[in-house]
Length: 603
Image (cartoon, rainbow, N blue to C red; front, side, top):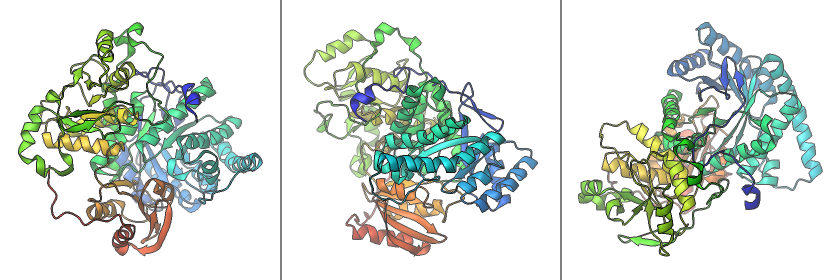
């Protein structure tokens, strides 16, 4: 899609203030999504769908923790048949949490599942569609023939869902677009959106409207762009295309990295008013996802500054300094501070306060990749209120690039404040981003809240191409604040300083222990700076997500692993107990291996 085409699209009523997107309500059992309902929390169990007792126990545990909708995989009709017993067990325990069947590849499994659960999730990329990674040209007639075949296979499910009052999620995954979509639109956010809209049109032709959309990807930039483009297209199609939106970063991983990626993707979209239900996908026990999802939603209050804080004349709306549908870094000019170049094509730099610099000064040389680079108080950065027109004009009158930031204690949401600054400031002036305008003085402050706030605010802006340096102020501990800064840069794809992992959450399809295996792979390869490794439990999204990874470790059969280079399988049916070593061999064969350092400094 061209820039001129993008310019006509709008995904957000106000890019400088919070306003939740208006959507219709759909019902999933007794739970409403969209409309005036709160943002709903979802998760997915990891138990084998054939194990009724284990599934029931896990669903009850999730519901007790505050999960409002629970998804269960149903990879074949045989698995789907057991949803009846799982549902009965959950209801017999007095729990009415709605259940969702996760369907890939098998229309007959969807038809069976719809008999027993309140919602069915279908993936347009592999439901009644072809994915063989074939490269071919589709004529308009061939394309239309494929759509007609999809219509014939999809319509019976729509009719059954209408009859039984079931809801549906039309959920596109970046890793599983069909060959037909790939060959016409490419592996792009536009392809993801068009794939979902094809299925939505069929649903509407059948007068079925009880559905929502999702656009999931492991790369937060891709995920953010896809959701924005979807909402813009829905807006363009008309008021009655106001279907609810489910948010998620798929294969986010575990630990801090998984939480940071989720906060960047989900948090930034919630800040724009997009999203009616969310799922945080962590390579951890499903129960660990719920408090993170709750915290991301609760954290929204800190980004919900409305336009009532300023008048329309002050804002000077109508222009936008970046394309929200296609990543391009803001074109600032290069400057040098304390021997570090920033702005222009230089890497995004990490600032710290003088107090924190002093606290780590004695060990800076031993801090490896987590070093502070510039002290904010001596950087020469000019603080300016983005609502102060005279101050902005004074800076723009200077032909020399000046590092600009926003002063502390501003009563504006961070994302909206920096967007406004970037919009009014001439682009040659570099910008220093802050995670919060309220520096922490509390060493006991909850780190998860700090992490989610910083990741959402700074990560969102970086994904829009805004920012030439960053400063973490919400974390009191010097070393921890620096680690958080670098981890956000890595998760946003802005500055790669360590191995990057794409790891899916476990589910009933998983063919090995994802948590243990991910930790083994991380322990063996965590020193490979800039190498991207995908760890996938099965082939549903695995091959597609390999396109973003250098190497892939994918469950091919029980206790058997397939290894990939990008999205191409190169080693098959490797015994699980040998697979990590064989992965290392594959990395060595492709000249991406270096021996680990003898010791790694701790921060």
